Length: 457
Ligand SMILES: *Cc1c(COP(=O)(O)O)cnc(C)c1O
Image (tube, rainbow, N blue to C red):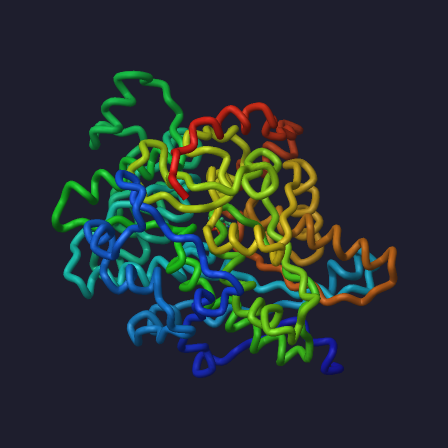
């Protein structure tokens, strides 16, 4: 076997990075400030104390470039980390492309995606502060199951508000949460005031991620022993995910390669940021100026490609701080497409900012073409990918095909966020011809944006 034939790159556990990378001090322009929803003034750490442990609040605004991963979190990571970097030889061959395709696979975590990378860290810091209970929301159930797993590791009770339509459609994610000891209810639920008000107004409301956030935030704000936890979007969540890119840097070195293009799917943006932030340093510094970073979203929820870059709430009820981000409007109700993890109205402020500065590209892809790409990946590389991940696979294949046209042997690094073993109903829908493309209409975006909060900046 030649050195260049290697298809898997393993890091030993003793070589796992022990620090997260915080991009904030390296940004070419500072991130827009976060505003208080009631006063419109910048939020203070004190404003957030009711919802988050102080350690995470400090991380959210930290000026430190590296943050030490606590021993206990490293120990938890070692249940499945480091994850493997793969060379996609079979896919390359099928595409007849000179491009070299690498993918970093996060599907080997207990919950089957990247999400436990931040779930275990958040559970740990909450435990340190003596918190007994954490409330959260979940869309398709990946985040709820990841936090349920983390709660089991650190002895914290987890309450999950799950978007009602998914609660009914995805019973197995709910069973996973129960197996790890969490309590999961459909949102809207009778357990909160916003939930009860909604049920009185519209008993058939199918829910949205933004609405479930409102319930989880109300739950945490109303109890002393409870904090709230978010699985994406916020700076500290993206930072916890940089373990992916920090490992990938070392593994790409083992492969003797540096990426020309990094591709990932974005819902709130955490898995992709976790991959590309440790590399974008080299774009800032000029060491790899022409590095291309492509964020892929569904046409049905096109926050980066069709949304406005504006201050908006993270939730429907307007309880969360105001974040400057690409948004479709906080009362956006997504169409029921299968990539449940990508149906959020906003986008991480860090990714929004970098896209606005022209440093991160965005692409929206239709649902059927993403499944075609996902199936081609399954039939070459073997992995049954999550419908979310398929978006990134679509663009990876498109870029590799462009290389076939141009004859360029580019190196493409794909952030592979997870497996689709709990999403086989979506595969069924695809194979039985029930999947449809749906592009979110421009007029609906415009209309929702008229309801953005007014801020004086
Ligand atoms: C949740 C999820 C996503 C989207 O979330 P990000 O915060 O954008 O990473 C993508 N892929 C998988 C497999 C997920 O579970």
